[in-house]
Amino acid sequence: MAESPELASAYHRKLKDAYETEELLGNPEVLKRSKEHLVRLLDEVETKLKETAYLAGEEFSMADVMLIPVLARLVLLKLEDEYISSRPNIAEYWVVMPPVQL
Image (cartoon, rainbow, N blue to C red; front, side, top):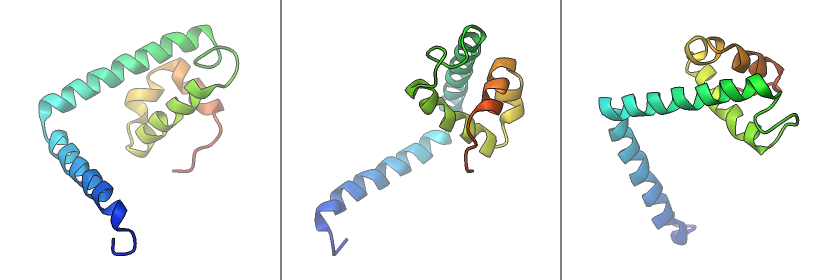
């Protein structure tokens, strides 16, 4: 911080946000809403992937770039069976995606 004092306030804001996020994660209602949101998102993705090879059509796009980290995080958290494997179109999509370094 001594080397870049102009970054100190940004750092402290990020640290404050991290603490607030940690507090929210301890709230069962917040977790419930987050899980419901994730399930809705993945259900929409599953439906879309019935129609097209990728999220926005027949070519890889920024929509796919945004989804891959979500799926990778689920794998990292060992939630693949619950959220990916249980959805056949997402499971197939995940297999053909370029490998992600976890």
